[in-house]
Each structure stands twice: as C-alpha cells, then as structure tokens.
Image 1 (spheres, rainbow, N blue to C red):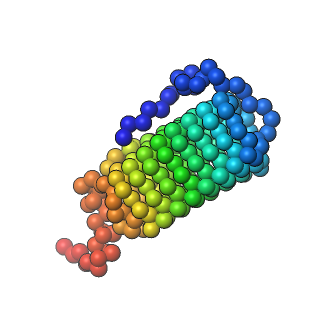
Image 2: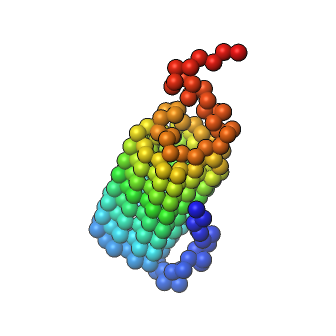
Image 3: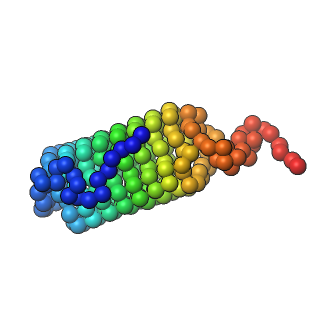
Length: 218
C-alpha cells in the first residue's frame, strides 16, 4: 500500500500557493492553502474548521480544540500536539512526519489515505475511529487505544507498539508483520483480521495459550 509523502515543503504540489498564517485559530474557519509555520497555539478553538491543502511546520498546539475539523491534503512536519481535542475529525490524503501527539483525544475520528512517519504517539485515544489505507511508519505507539475502532488496510512498518489496545476493534487486512514490537496488553483480543509473521506468532503464543486455557510444560 505505497503512499507517497513529500520530504520537503517545496515538494508539495501546492507549495507555490501557500500563504503565511497570522493571528489565532478560529472555529468553523476555512483555511485554504495556508502555511502555519513555527507558531504556538494554546487553549484556542478551531472546532469545525476545514484545512485544505495546508502545511504545518514546527507548530506547537497545546489544549487546542479541533473537534469535527477536517484535514484534506494537509502536510504537518515536526509539530507537537499535546492535550488536543481531535475527536470526530476527518483526515484524508494527509501526512504527519516527525511529530509528537500526547494526551490527544481522537475518538470517533476518520483517517483515510493518511501517513504518520517518524511520529511518537503517547496516550492517544482512537476508540471508535475508522482508519482506511493508513500507514504508521517508524512510529512509537505507546498507550494508544484502538478499542471498538475499524481498521482496514492499515500497516505499521518499522513501528514499535507498546500498550496498544485493540479490544473490540474490527480489523481487515491490517499488516503487523513489519512492526518492530507488538506490545498488546489485550493479548489475542482484537487481532482477528490481522496479518502477523511466524516470529510474532511465537511471541504471542503464551497469550493465545492462556486465552484457550492451555498449560504448556516442558
């Protein structure tokens, strides 16, 4: 599922159209070909806003309310999203690279054809989210909750999963083979529909045995 992600701002097809953003974020605003560069936004609200062909570089958002916001063809690099409300947001044809998402509420969100590369996700709530054609590449996912979420054609190449919860999730074509580590506290719960490698199967074998009531003794 190759998804192309530009490495540089100048590689964006709409780079020549970008104009710098000034002032605070605003709810229900439409941001079209806007460049958010190096700004800090704290406890502001952009709920219901639309970001179309926008770029974020080195932006720090803390406690920002973005509920029901839409991100279409957005490119975000080296940003920090801390304690933000991203619930019920929509992401399509977008990329987040080298970013940090910590304490983020993203339950009920929808991500389609989106790449997260070299990101750190910690204490991120994605319960009930819908992910289709999403790639977590070289990411650290720690204490990320996919409970009751629907994941279709999602992959985790080079990523480390620690305390990632999948209980109640529905997986279709979810490829975990290239993940560096599978730290799944729910064990086998939620893995139906996933693709794993033989070494990963051996790693998870004790959890499968426990779930089936099997005692293994040598």
